[in-house]
Length: 107
Image 1 (cartoon, rainbow, N blue to C red):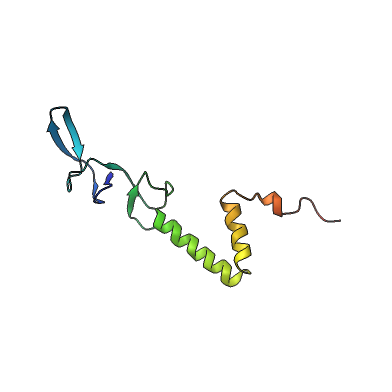
Image 2 (cartoon, rainbow, N blue to C red):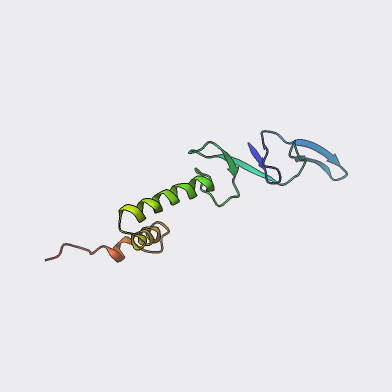
């Protein structure tokens, strides 16, 4: 599957065009040659470009929605923004758990 980066059309096969340099494939709807592999989001089922900043399993919109939901939960129920910032730093790899969790048992 492919997704056109111009019009967003999802297609299996592009339209083949011919010119002096040879044959080439374009979007069957808008005839643009700017397309990429399409990935189906495992959460919402929509297709997105393999060139996007999303992961290989979830589209950027779903990632943002889950992040916003988690952030709202943290702000409401787990002590506010400081804890959210700490968790986000751990998820992003900016903060290592061993930097904040004491090693060993206190005596």
